[in-house]
Image (tube, rainbow, N blue to C red):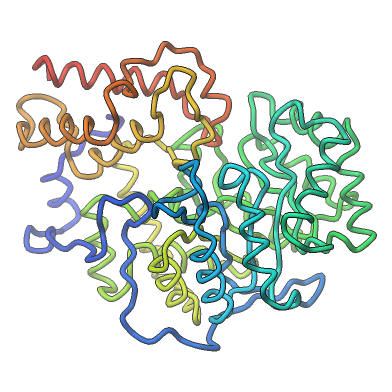
Length: 466
């Protein structure tokens, strides 16, 4: 634990009495992706969506963008996690509802939903007039076998085919800055093979209307691309922005960059920002109970998630805020947050920054459950292990010693919950430290180190050493 603070001290320090600790979100459950959304029971507001203007085209873009990474499967799960058939009928219904209430920006990728997202998104959107929505997709050439010029062109053309369109509204270089050497990998993916020049020519031909990139990791790449803005003329850039990452991103992981820097660098060049991870992979909707109470005391009728979405949308140079909405309650809650968007006051922004400071007292692992680390060659369920640990940290179930308050209860909650969340053959004790996972993590987590730490903690709990 980087900073020592127990549950009782936390309550005393921040003035939260026992009478309010029991406040929880009515819609919270343990189902993956259904966390901390409390959909308003009021009528959905028709014609109230807030829009931002694209400075290049003058087009109005909905401040709520639909992230198509988590389309539902027929089993009721998310295609981001499960290699199952996408429930096209439900996807169609979600898209229809989104468009009905003003959403017009849909973000997908050849890599999403195990390669199935563009196809499902294309089917759903093609049922609507082409001028009623904007498609964003990416050149997701992560694997070295896709780094040739022809492979990149083939991927781009396949996107047009799958999306049933002859032009892309918003085209991104996907995940620049990833890898141990972000600049070297960027050059191999986009410069040495001439793919960036090809995409620029496609923009000149009108088959790409806006060209940008999504940034992950190596700040040298971000700074290089902005330094060459006059050459590339970026129409937009996608960044990770939320109230925790605004000032604490580097504290969470030294390879990260604070969102304050990223946003301000774009704003001073008048480059619109598209926001990803407004919920930080769900971590800002599945916060410690004490933070839930703090937020609900301010606005009991709003969900925890709505604070994070409104925060992202309150920055004036943000074009749209992406949300991966698998379930209809996600969509409804977000529509209520953005129809219209009530921007946060400076006092409310400071309230969230102080909330972020409090959250930093809880040393969770910065896993966004993106699953880029998977599959593990030894069968470990890496995200589930890390997320169970984070859940127990948030709930005060990571005892430091047998003298800790509620030790027996916390010990049982951790160990029983671990076995329920992660099958025994996929738990941390099977990690051999091969390090095949770590280079793929956008948050630059030293995954084997964390797995070994968790395994040691589990063994100490089991044997009574803690």
